[in-house]
Length: 203
Length: 203
DNA sequence: TCACAAACCTAACGTTTGTTAGACTTACCA
DNA sequence: TGGTAAGTCTAACAAACGTTAGGTTTGTGA
Image (cartoon, each protein chain N blue to C red):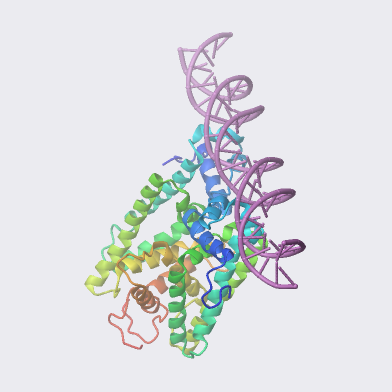
């Protein structure tokens, strides 16, 4: 929404991007505005022309991330009817977004503690909404009999937690491609560690 | 190893315990030694009689946690032969330890970034060893044909990640008991979201 | 050419922080 | 009773931090 077509990114956008990288590297609290300014090609206090405070930068990153996740997920599963396919596409989107926006998602997942009460409540709310979408799918699938989840709320948390953690260890230069990670995780989410071994095929 | 039998906890022990609570509440970087001292019933600089630096306190918490996890896991699965039972007991131990030591485990899982290079390397090493135990079990189970995991390393990371995240949301006063959480998670790890519905029972 | 606003810089302020040195207190043993 | 060591306190230091005020540059439109 910030940059249209092919314009070079605004300074504000650069600062946000560099902030995400810096915060991910050193953590929000250990990152200084002076270093953020340096990385953004600007001197110390100039940041305050674009942002009111250090915390606002953090909030902007997290809020935009949550908005993208919510909107992207909604768009991804809208047309799909079957719960199994909905879950499949939802998870794939979740993983891909996390791998394509590692800095921002990592920050959004680790720096909640450094948000003020107001800001935190808003992010937590959006998080809850995001998670409710998944637990809704699990509920529907279980009701229809195609899934068998005891506690859908717990399961959705578990699914998101394990996918969210991918940027922690994923390495671009590593042996695994994004597609492989997506495939493996989806397989695990659906079949567990017991896998397809010794069971009827149903998908 | 610190306190034997029923002696009252040493000041050093109190500081470590309060530090875990404080670090979990506010994060390591946002916690001040002055507040840690206050909570530990001691004045400002007295902490330095027991610890050389703020970082040493963090490292002690994380290192002890990892040692307990490694030793506890080993002890828990030693006698068991069947990979399915080994995994079952391993996960149950992992979850229970995380729920019984929420402050310490939460700190150990979130504050890696605030460790110096040396300390971090040591903790990362122990983490890798811990995780290797689980991936070993999955490998064995897959080789024997009782499990069906495509990438055992990936799956073990996923399993640990989702269990490790439990202290994030678990509430002692909430509707769920520890036993229920353990049961649900183990069920999910083994059977995935498809569950037992429409499959042969094999366990 | 001038005016004006956006963008940026410089220099500093006040506060907080981890850390330290040295004095003080307490408990125990000879 | 005196000495010694462990434990704690007090007071301060130097560095780093977020933030601010006011000046300077740059670009644009009339």
